Image (tube, rainbow, N blue to C red; front, top):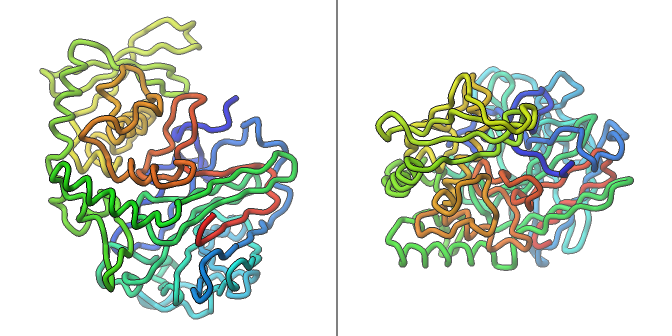
Length: 438
């Protein structure tokens, strides 16, 4: 069996299918979205997680004189999924009570100050769902609690957020009785805090994601300015500056939060070409699940893409009609960047929910005019003039090309190389998170 499973097969600790894992609203309602672990039937899961706690090593590789803070948050699985923050000592759990009013300050010190250059700060956490480790430079991030309790997380798209001018970033994790699953994420933005992951296991080796290359943020900003010069599209408007330097680069989806006309009409001509292509030949999507390969052509006078046949091993590889066809209307640019609106909104139809990640990934990577079979090979990604250039340049500026750059960036062909920047194992020993250069 392959190490990596499709996003449809991944399960959260509550057993539900993860949807958009990383997108944050301008002002969070406090619900943290979990990193989505793969199922535990994987060959690499040599043993079950052997402890109710996880050792985390935070390594500071920033230059001398840079003060780095970390904050760990999530939901405590073994404490009725209570809101969890880790105390400043790196060991003591803090479970905030529900306050009487919104935007109540966190009453305990949860800002973990990392040691100097080259130092390691050791943490211990219990089983956590929807975990994040936030990093900030110069001063701690400000968090608040709403009634519930619910954590009000920092936002890069809310201009009134008290953290908006700070350098900050994060990585995500879920640690339960089966496994640790962790990933770096650029779904919302790229910061000037490179994050690298190394997972050392008891019996199944070491997994590593190296993160951004040196000067990665500035190189991404330069590439987007060059793309704007080449095609006239507002890629340069995704760059956020502060005090005459690049502070972060927003994803197109998050950029549209502040300006909902940004990129309007960008993908629509490409969508029309895709619909025309599959009016005369079928599209084939491997669901990597019980439906096998499903096929579609445009229908309804060219306004919809309808998946009407399937071919699965359980049927002996014979093609047969789909009882309840999955029908997709044309997505807008906003739908493509979000992966969760319009025809990409998930619902009650499980087959449609399996198609959505693969189809939305194909649009973001612009592979739909390059082949008829999806998920497509990595060699076909981002080859069209109209594509998600943010995702393209983010991958180009990571050492190993890995890191979520849109919500379904973990879609890949069976046996294909991981794009998402995740590490996972059922026998974690130490999870090392390096900031400032991996």
